[in-house]
Image (cartoon, rainbow, N blue to C red; front, side, top):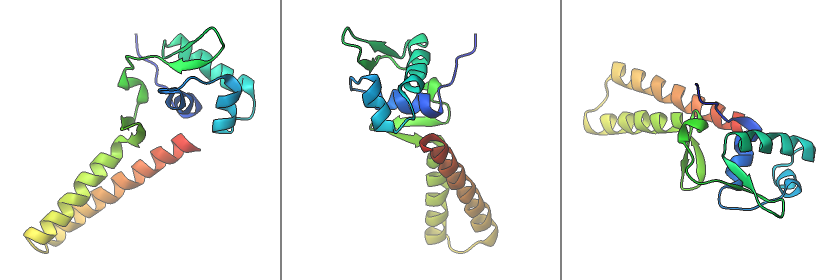
Length: 133
């Protein structure tokens, strides 16, 4: 059986609940979601995946033992969500700078690493923008 990916609003709600206990209306206000029923829908999805639990007061919290494969193109780094492409972009950018400083100007190397770096940074931005909006 294939694992489901959580993304969009469901992912935003899960990340908000990491280390916190919140009710439906609190989540709605924090993420500026249109209605409590939308929040409840996403919380139900997360409960079915055993990623959140509800306490006796109706507050939800994230369950430990999270499998990072649910995040798809993202990783959690010090509590922040970072697109995986950002690491590739940082690698190619640092390679480009290091090569230029240590070896000197080489048009093919600079062109290839510059284009690769630009592509990964654009992909990271688009992935992050898709998560936020």
